Length: 434
Image 1 (cartoon, rainbow, N blue to C red):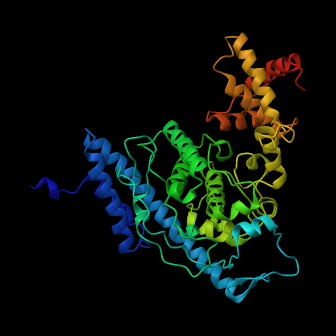
Image 2 (image 1 turned 90 degrees about the vertical axis):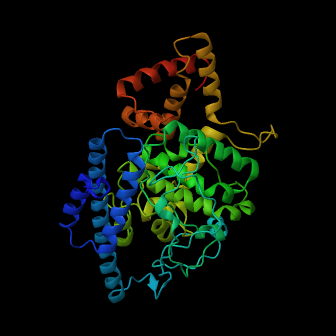
């Protein structure tokens, strides 16, 4: 019998599984089968034992069938919710345009200028992908890469353009679609992705051209989220300029960073408490993360950050300290005073150094005189920063977790945290640092 026409064990398993789910139509089943065939062809070139590959393909088949089923269920819920809204419109909505009741949502001038005149439409479809987007080198089904770790990988299924939308976008760049998730991470390393993230941030600071790096920056950031080790706020990444006049060019950066923040919480299984039912469905931990829908319904709205995190989706204090944009204004100021300082470096009179600067100097001198400390400077710095950001009453468990998320390491246990902070406090006191 011709070996090429034999049914592989994974295919027999797949046929058996889909037969149990009649809600999956023929086109969905064929798309899932094609993904498995591509994986079989790709990984078959590098797998010596056919049995191991079949086992992996069966596991993946079970996973994508479950995801397809959950997606259909979520679509059905959204359809039922839309039907309900048509019969019982929310007082804040008039027709398809977001209008305000007597209790207006809080806006601020800086974000209003930054995001421009958005035409609010909470039911708009995903936006059209930008044209002439540079394609990454193929690394197999699911992702793309080059020989360098973490450079240019893109979900293969995202090459098809989504339907266009009639929503008025704040900028041309915001019409770009996001990749389908999750990524296949078997060809990537956390260290390689961190290194590439730094390279992209350097390129942005040099050229101030976000569109040139956007596609890869988003992919690298979402892949780092799946590793669940380095929190978004502690990564070297593009930052919005301080000057209000310069911010309009970077509307898409703000939107992307909000999407990345929410994806980080989703990857870590963190729970938020959205106020509106459609956001409860969209942000449920059991739902598949839909970047385009989240960008349209949440990230691209010109609301204040305080409203987003403290009223609309309720991001708790511990979670806020891990995120780049989903933080209230007061917390952003705290981060700035602790880590960055205020004022221009070339103006000594108006410059206020970061609180961290004197601590880093103390730790550097300590390590220079004590060989046991050398190589552990980053962890001591991270523990001090975590305590400053969380407050003096924070538990050692929370301090250990946040310190680990700064270094991309597992959290330290409470006893280790207590011991290291005690030694650090003694050195800081000895150096006259309050």
